[in-house]
Image 1 (cartoon, rainbow, N blue to C red):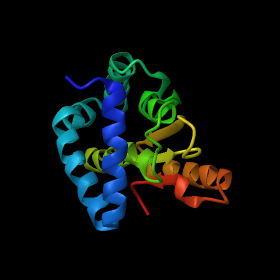
Image 2: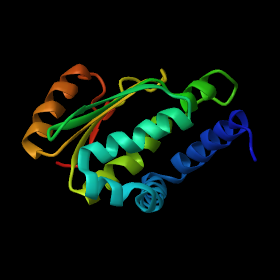
Image 3: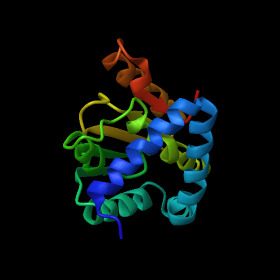
Image 4: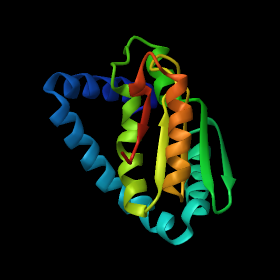
Amino acid sequence: MIPSDHFVKFYAEIFKYLEKRGKGAVDEYYKTIAEHQKTHCLKLFREKGLAGMKEYWDSIIFEENCDADALLEEGRSYTFYMHGCPSLGKVLDNDAEACGIYCSHCPGWVLPVMSAAGFYCVYDLIRRDIPRCTFKVFASLEDARAFREVVRRRHPEDPGLTLCNFD
């Protein structure tokens, strides 16, 4: 098994390689990862909806020892607050140096899975150089669009920090 300190360095180098190959290579990678992730959580999200998302990410918080919280507003939204991403945190704590697309790997798979499950997701990457982000999932497109505008106002200097699976 590869120790996580080595894995995140490897992961960072993969993203640097993909970034050099262009948007098409990055998009293909995310598409492949999203298809794989569907085998792990799509059924749960479809069957249990927002509560299934909380169930899934609560297990991830525990398994990956994340400094994170999750909030379920039954029937309305699910919010995941990553206070300290273990992956980016490890990259920043060593000599791996995160590339510009490093933080896009989570929304790269999460957004397509949310679409497939019939939900609307808004990702707030906050910044690309701190191990913190938030995403919120809605059952209602109208609620998601309203929240997207709130998040976009936080990032007038870098609109690419706000990602969603609708537009």
